[in-house]
Image (cartoon, rainbow, N blue to C red; front, side):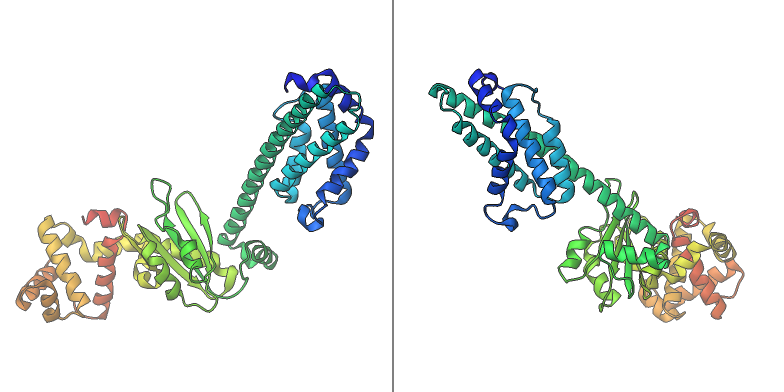
Length: 400
């Protein structure tokens, strides 16, 4: 506070009003609502509470001007008002306007009783008033913004807790599902698409800007960031999953996966687990958003690691023990043959070699395995075994 704030004329003028703060409070309230109740932005505040806050503020201004109480940038009165109004949702601009109006009310009141005050003392008194108002306004704004940040943190923690509850299947409880629907603005029933994406070493999700992209086509979504994954809960309404996936795929910068459910919030947790399983089937370095429907065999294998190991050992161990060049050639040929519906001719076209070359390689594979490659069971098991060595993890690495 400047020395002028404690000069004798200023003290005397401020002290003269200390017993009449209720009158100043009436003047301040009249000034606040001069444009009508709607323009004041104080609708969340009970009238008696607003009067009390104005009374405390004006009293504080006068005490600081008289020098009876020390001032500081963390003024307790202004800070408490700021925190309380932030919790009530009163805009900061409305509060700062009230503080300025309060300063004007005090200034005009002091002029009324300045008949015997030397003219040269009036200027310092005005300077002192606005120095006090500026200090209190700074304390108010700092406390208000701090309270808002704390409220945002609490809101975000609450939001995260609700989403984690949904992912943990708590939405099977009707009361919890209703609370989630109301507080996150999500439908309880209907179809959902759940999307998961990796979070990179830089802390950034590999799916960039999904909420904005979906909002542009009027699809609402809620996104939840964990340490290792970004999770999206997307009500499908009348849209098909493919419509949403087509909007999200161009945003992928790494691995992402999705699974849907037709049974509302109650099964979002299940869809999330399926999406996570699908994500785990994608090799490192993959840049794609893949639905579970595209990875059914791989998901089954990931879910049964011991069966996966035995399947590979039963069918492919002799090939995996070969030198790298021959191993890769035979595995590539076997994959192409199966993809071609076990047609040596079609496989040869895809491999850019002669049909007899394919047949010779398949004969070599059959000799190494000691097993017939024909038949439905062989087709299924070989296909799964080849999928198994391409999956992330120890078995896949052994084939590299």
